[in-house]
Length: 545
Image 1: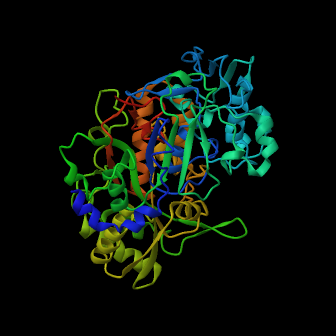
Image 2 (image 1 turned 120 degrees about the vertical axis):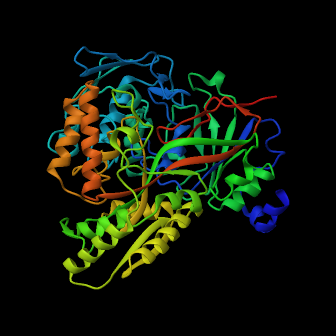
Image 3 (image 1 turned 90 degrees about the horizontal axis):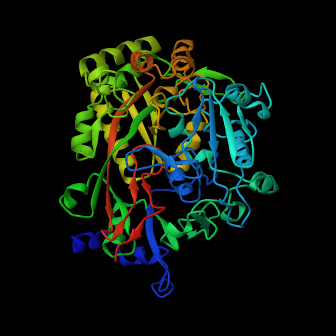
């Protein structure tokens, strides 16, 4: 295996990677880790993509963390929150011994400020829908001052959240790194430069970012000596290396130069049965996203010349074989999507899975797809259409994009798909510019199944399609503000939202990921997650002797 992999990559490429010498590490406990692409931000309030979410995980100090069962456990908070009988008031007490790396005490007001930044339109956060805090939508829209947001410090150690509606998932949502403390005076002193480099951050988490200024492909996390639980943080340093190419990654792992690496679907069969292969069934959905209404220079939106046509969109929904994609292209490292909401994130009040309760809503029907496509072309008054599909430049994204291009052009004669494989940050910028054709995107759920259909709600910042629907908004508002802990009502509204999005072809659910990793067998006490941004929680990991 090592000889085969070694042939794939020239020695000069390995030498070009930044690796700290063994001599420099002789007296330090160092972990070498991987990350799949460039980081777009290390601002905990602005993180959206999974790569940046992973990058901030070690420096953040959220109120709660998720354990190995995805249950929230106290972190910066001393206990689970006190929730009022009506579910609208959530009171959290934080530790009185928590400090930033410079020794400054962490206070409840820092949580208030961090929360306000999420909703403040001047900050431009993309995480305001993590928790539905009172007046959040009005603050986000600029209709009321950020001080009117439903969060306040009752003392130096007690923070109170007032919600728009009872939320059975609120404790898990407060485990999001967005609710990590931010020192207001420091952040405001940095101005627009806040979090644009390691020096422009003041961390309170287990590690401190070092050597990152926004463009590096290698940086490190250094143990925070003032962290409240520093005695249980084993590693002195964790060095991250951006590794996009699978062959490069596997060579580095086989050579012992990194201690963990992702394994793309092509390579998983080669490692089956090995002790160091870790497979994680995830809730990450990969979708092919439409631009339905395009943002114009004057701030208005106009219908996309092709994809505003529902028949064209439906042709694309039913013109792809998800079974073939998952088995032949992804080698079983994924399961075919059944709808917008992934199977396994929740169960019905009767204990049924999403798949069994809602049914398989997306499937292959080439005859129907071709009929939809024919109707769409007639309605547009053309014989053919050409669309650009943007994907990230990672191996797996390129592979999925290439398959989609081939399948669509074969199954739907008259359709041309032009591929654009770009860095993750570029793809993300295009999607947030609301002016593209097709984009390979996805969503990793943030604790509540509502987050999946919520992506396409009119006011949500990640409604990349810019689909405008009062009907969907009403369903989402019911989930957020009316259903509370009535799980029967919640499940019915989830069913309606899932069905609505498929019936109107607002996105194309493709697959639900099964992720493979190779992890040094000496590494112990790490936690893997289905939910949230970071798959691995390395904060308390250690090397077994």
